[in-house]
Amino acid sequence: MNARPWQAALEESGALARLAAFDPRVAGTFPLGLDVAGSDIDILCHAADAQAFAGVVWQAFAHLEGFSMHQWTCGERAVVAVFRVAGLPFEVFGSPLPVDVQAGWRHFLAEQQLLETGGGAFFEAVRAARRTGLKTEPAFAHVLGMKGDPYKALLALAPPLS
Image 1 (cartoon, one colour):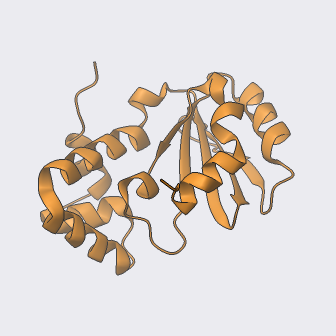
Image 2 (cartoon, rainbow, N blue to C red):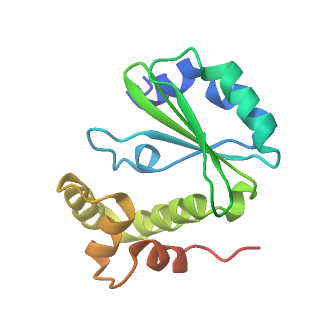
Image 3 (cartoon, rainbow, N blue to C red):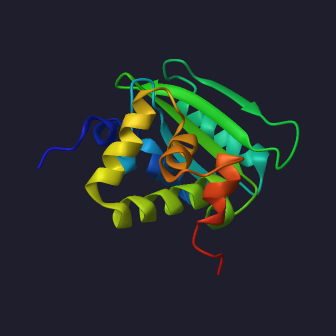
């Protein structure tokens, strides 16, 4: 069985091996099958030491097309790096929070569960909403008829923290 283009790009990047010390996990639209033109491959990491994480990311990916890295100046002060491999954009997110409690991971788990239980028609409705330009969480909220902040609404559907 051949890997899908995003999986081949992930393998080519070596990102999971290079970031192994930071519990890297792929989340977002590609593993859900909801990617659209311009979607990126999201990798969530636990970066308790932002400086050490940034050093590893710089060493591993700075030579790649479109590389840039910044650190948020508020909240959890996450480090975010972007680059391209095999024509696909990557976003590596390093938070001081363990991946299991990061909002991005919890959104991903909620979306995965909704797609598994919602069936094919639900999947197609979310994919159609994505194709209109909606981001992932707003697309789910739209299909589910949720009001208010779609990010908070999806987070409320995530499995409870253990």
